[in-house]
Structures are given as C-alpha cells and as structure tokens.
Length: 564
Image (cartoon, rainbow, N blue to C red; front, side, top):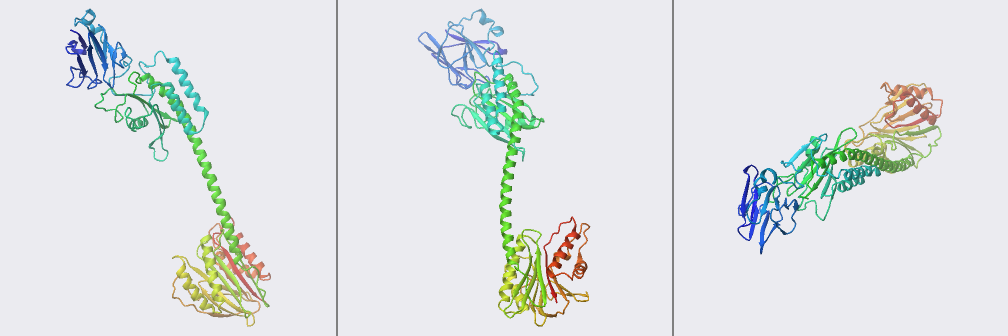
C-alpha cells in the first residue's frame, strides 16, 4: 500500500498509509492527513491516484507545496522516494509502503527542508539595525548582478532635482534589483507635523493598494522604521485563515528601511512588499535596501530643498506681483485723492492764504479745503480722521463731500458741522472719529465765523503774541445728537492764523520728545516774513529735522492765513 513518511521533528518520522484514492493534507481537523504546523494551510494539498499512478496537487495554499524542492503548480506524478514538502513539513512518498534505509534515518539526514525558503527566520518579524551584517542571503550567486543593479539605482538619483522624479527613480530601480517586488512605497515625514505621508507608490500587475494579494496598506511598519530608525524584515508564514502581519490580509514578506538625510535626520522610509512565496525577502535583501536607502535619502533631501526653493521663489514672485498691483492701485488712489485738494491758493485781496498736506502713507487721513462762496466769502476747512492710511483717506473723502454739499446750501458753520456729524455717525465704524475746524472768512470785514469739532487753531498777532482758537465742541462721529456752536474772530493786519493737524506738534524725536506747539509757533514767528506757502514748507522741514531718523507716523497738514 502506498504511504507517505512525515518528518515531525522532535516526534520523529511517522508513516501514513494512503488507503483511499484521495488524501487531503492540511491543518483542518477534517483533513485525511492532519499536519498541525504553522505555515500549513487548512486545505494545503492532496495526493490522489489515477489507475496505478499517484499524483500530488497543491490546493492553492499560501506557502506552497514542493516536490523534490520544486514548487508544485499543477498535478504532478509521484515516484517512489520522492520528497514532498508541505511548506516546512517534509515527507517521502513510498509506492509499496516499505521504507528504505534512508527513510529509517531520515530524521537526521533526509527530511530537513532544503528549498529556497530556508533563509526564513522562525519569527514573523525581525528587526535588524542598519549596521548589522545579515546572515545568509536569498541573492547568493547573484551578487555581481545585484551590485550592478544597485549602482544603476544610485546613478539614476543624480539625474533630476524634481522630488517626484527622484522618488519614482528610486522605486523603479528597486523593482529592478528585487524582481519579486509587487508593491513599493516611499513615506516622507511632513515638515509641519512630523507625520509620515505616502509620497509615491509603485506596484506590478493590476492590483490596487487594497488588492487581495497584498492587503490594504497600513502605516504601522513605516512608523516603526521612522521612530526606531531601524530597518525591518517581515516574513508572514501564517495560513490563509488568519494573519497577524503588518497588513490586514496575506502578506508574504516585506523589507523597509529608513531614509536619512545628509545630517542623519530622519526623512521617511522605503517599503517593498512581495507575495512571491518562492522568493521571499531575506536579511541580505534588507541589507541591499538599507544600502540603497542611505544614498537615496541624500537625493531625496536635495530634491526637497530644491522643491522648497522653487516654492519660495514662486511665492516670492506671486507676492511681488501682488504688491506691485497693490502699489499701482494705491498710487491711483493717491493721485485721485490729490485731485480733491485745492488745485491753487485762494486769491483774495488783503490776505495770503495757503495749505498743504504731507501724507506718511499712500493715503492721507488729513483734510484741508478752500470753498469760494458766491458772495465773495471763502470757506476754509481743516480736518483729521483718526488713524492714517487708505482707510482714513476714504473717510476723509466722505467727510469732504458732506462739507462741500452743506456749505453750498448757504448754511452757517454750526449748521454744517451739526449735519455732517449726523451723517458720519450713521456711516462710520465705531471708534472712528474726525476732528474738524470750519471757518467762513469775510474779506470785507476781516471777520472769521468759525466752529470747531475738537480741532484747535492758533493766532499770532503783529507783536508775535500767540493765543489759541479753542475747540467749541466734541469731535465728529461721536454722538449724533450734538448741536455745534459758531464763534466770530476779528482778524487784524499782521495776524497769522495757523490751522494745523496734530501730526505737526506731535512729531517725535529719536529721544521720544514731542515737537510741541511752542516750537510750531516759534517757527511761524521766525519765518513770518515769508509767504504763507513758504512758511508751511519751513514748518514741515522743521518737523522733519526734529524727528531725525525717527519716522514721522502721522500725516502733516496745515492751512495758514496771513492778514496783510
């Protein structure tokens, strides 16, 4: 009767008669020949007869059936003395059931598996430091061929500074080195949060990243490699029923090595997977991958630096273009605003009147205006919107339009400010306010009817005595129910009326000392022999000289009326 002699290791060799036409071998208790060994599938293989011949057939086991150290892919005829491996468990087929002498001592010399799987380690996962010299190799006899392939990989890394191309070249080269590769992944540590991110992947065949043969991709192995800075070889020897590998389903073997940068910083990891049971990865393969990854890490870091430089250059170009367009718009806004200031000085007999504004930014929140009235009088306005820049400039334009509209209606200065205040309270955002001095000059009587919303003026007489034209009420856009009052100022020959904004007397030096009202008035009295226009220029230059290297942070504006 035909039989098969199974080597059970420490239990010795046992003979199992093949009594029926079909014998199912596997780990399931319903099998005819039960082999309870890790790596043997539930229904691993079958031995059956056809006439007087016997055949062995693999039943799609995960780890394979081998006949005389060759993997069985189709039913294969058995001959007396043939050695069968049910993965690691070996047996000898006997046609007549009588062992020969070699079978009697087979436990010592004949039944140890000698197939390409013998480089496997008993454990599912082994960890090897990158400096460890691997013992044994599945690439023995091919060292020169592998060396040439490795050199090819290394040589390809210098061809591009594009990160995506570098990563693709690494995987292409590794697939040439490890022909059994089914899937390759490169994980890079994100600079922002130090989390590994899958940056490139490659695989053979039509499988997806969640293929049945390799299982859905997980990050655990890459995390281990990156955290421990160690290469990992994983060999899954479990059956098709249950898996404890680093992937969810049936992974045969994988190798993973860290990517280290020029300064030994961790950049990520390279992982290569295979489901080829004939050629699982070995420690020697891991050593090859580690050698490649050491060079690949340098190329990856240079490519990343190049990528950062390109990103920064692009951002700089975008920002530069954005600023250019913004500056153009601001220049347009500034030019439009300049057209809103009086184009020329008023020509009124007996008076020398001038005004000027010196903005600190593209937009100016200060305001001055000369509005001729039909009866020969002249409305003079000076104002200051809180803050400065473009926002203040827009509020200034809005204030100017209201003042001009109400002055044109022939209203008195107190009525104009009362109505302008109500409009601004409805329009302006909370916290924004306007100081304003509004006067109407009658050249015939030299009288100035005026009202002030928190904005002072100053008069210097012919004897250089100075007095303040104090504000009569609160600033605009504070409370909408304010009623403003009008006052009258009688001007005399030799008087100089100064209507400044606070940017003049609040100019600060490098020692944080303010220019002050006294210096402002002293500058006026010193230069009173000049025209009003020249006096304003002298005042602005005095402020700039006083500030020195300290930037002037507020707009400087002034209207000056000299009585001849």
